[in-house]
Image 1: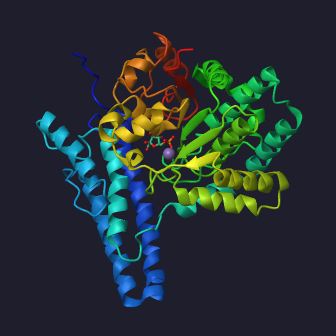
Image 2 (image 1 turned 90 degrees about the vertical axis):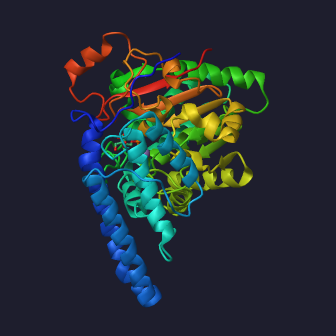
Length: 436
Ligand SMILES: O=P(O)(O)OC[C@H]1O[C@](O)(CO)[C@@H](O)[C@@H]1O
Ligand SMILES: [Mn+2]
């Protein structure tokens, strides 16, 4: 029988999880409470006394949640109206059954409790009358794109020039630019708002595609060659190549992901691309469908021509079906991906017919490897624990103390170089299960 390492957990005071549950999560909740507090007045203006009471009730329940976390109360089964509640409760029960102590915020697996906070926020909002669809992070997500507009303009200009100058059959050039756009999308993952507890974290490099050479030494594992070979191989074998992108953050990161998609579609390296957002406000900056729509209409009306053209082109792609957005509640469960086949078998089956699934970001990586305390030289394949519907590739900057696939001894050397190497977003991986 396989024995797995233990899950990362805030019960270890020296861990990154401990700092997250103790400081970062309450800080994020405080911001959510402030934003909802502002809704008291506007709800009153729109819906009268009823609206005012409704928003006050939301603020009260969120404050209660913050105090539960800060005082390490036991986790309880969800009792709300959202349809994934049974799936959540089942996992909690399984945890309780396999552990003697009751699960609490600081003692249960970090992956469960951090996801649980966002699911609880969604449950509170959904229980209200007037704030059901209110996204407390929407404004921050929009701000982060607006603050990255110079980088957006430069990247759109770069894509435009590549589209103009590179021939569709010039494989060598295409490979070079594929790797560039893949890396731009990778480094776009630095811009999440959860690691900074919601503080401004926009793109501060104005020409992201010109910085790639200098950043190469920070990519610890790099499967871009294999990903490229896989795409070429599938193109030769099939009429329709499909790539799926499991999104992470809105703002600049989403823009870099869409640039990569447009590059692949324009040069016929993929025929259809499916993107997968979250269905509830999640880890502060994660993409919801409404963030994508907002971004495309914001950029379409931008006065910078390359940006508005690109955005209009992307809107057309969603209309003609070469790009599709697919929603699924699985992405906002606490489940590691090795449980996808059990808890969302349709999604697993759906991925089996994809040629390549790209997973963006840190949380997706944590879920790929189960958020377990793996020795760092464990193979990626082993850490996936049989999650292998098709070829997978994770594009992730390191913002949590879990990483696999390194050479023996490499982690020690990195720790000497930089104490914070696993959590400060400076290092990255392009990691894959591809066997080409
Ligand atoms: O947006 P990402 O890349 O998934 O990062 C989410 C962040 O949230 C965390 O869970 C910390 O709160 C880290 O894992 C990570 O830094
Ligand atoms: Mn995120």
